[in-house]
Amino acid sequence: MMGKFAALSYCWGGKDELECSPPLKLTPSTVSELRSGIGISKLPLTLRQAVTICNYLSLEHVWIDALCIIQGDASDWANESKKMATVYALSTVTIIAASSTSCHSGLLASDLNSFALSTPPLRLPVLVAQRESLSGFHSPISIARDPIDKRGWTLQEELLSTRYIKFTKDDLQWKCNSGTECMCRQPTDVAKSRPFVLHNLLREEL
Image (cartoon, rainbow, N blue to C red):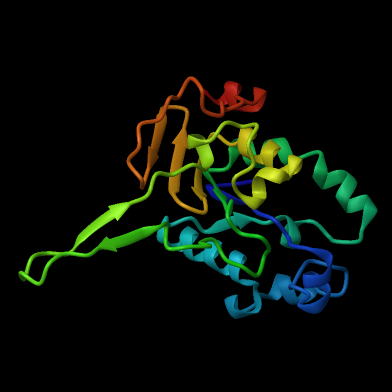
């Protein structure tokens, strides 16, 4: 993997949904089309939004399993699955679609619970408050708050990442080896939050 790139961690979705609305993915029959370039509109919503975030961060590449591993090819899966630790450990940032139930549902499942408080008609500014976040690193690792928390494979992707942006059901969170930040502005007990696993390859780079 040359240069800077992002990696996406997300849930594909349930069998019925994927059969009803099959997303574009890398298969022997789509290799040529994908190599020649496709319009972003052909991607499911979660993947499209991940590409938009990469553009905003000036990252030219994003690793997405459905588009980087030939689906239905056991040999390619055997080769590429061995590289998962390297992909997530060496990505510039991992985009985690924690609140997304599928590749079609997008990164934000809610408006991050911002809500306006009623004020008397005195031409005063409207007060905006934020509910307490109970997801992501504000939640014990043993409690599944978001759909992605129920998947062992995606937990591995989070733990291997050196830094991530996580879109939870009630917060937008950043975490790296230097600390954490979140939109809800709640204090974070870093000692109790989910630790990063420093990959051996990464140690060699430091």
